[in-house]
Image 1 (cartoon, rainbow, N blue to C red):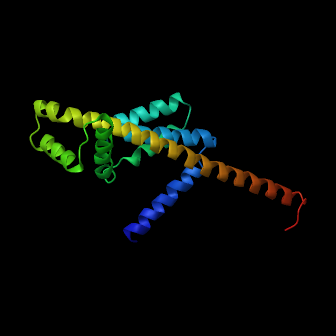
Image 2: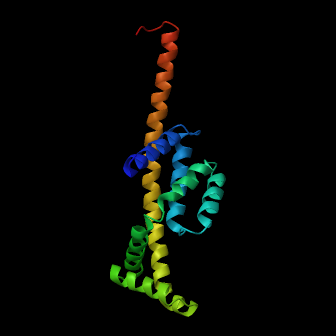
Image 3: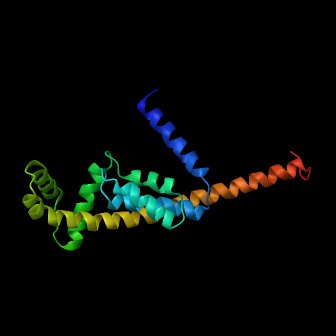
Length: 177
């Protein structure tokens, strides 16, 4: 089986698992929104994503498993695009207006010549830009995620209830095939 077919199979599996999860459309959509927001704000590789998403999901009485899974919006394949975009947008908002080339150079300087002093000098504007951009992308992503999942879940639950009603009516002989 090719990589694309396996990936599509995993996506379909997770989609159906989400559809069949317990809870109202609001609680499931809220869990996704929490996970997306936390996944954008907290960098990958830090266990904080897991802990924060689960704690916030429990606090808001949503599904912590779905919230945790939604943090996977930031993964090793997506962050190579996400983090520079966060820094770029954030830098323009706070007034430092960095280009992608400057962001790359700053990151390379911090990575190759790491010291706390270098990190403190070069990293402050980059870290602030990252955080501001991450909050913006996190808010936008979580709002979009909430409404998309809410719509999908609501439609699925309505169709499921209608099918159950029709099946019950057929069993009782109220309607014919």
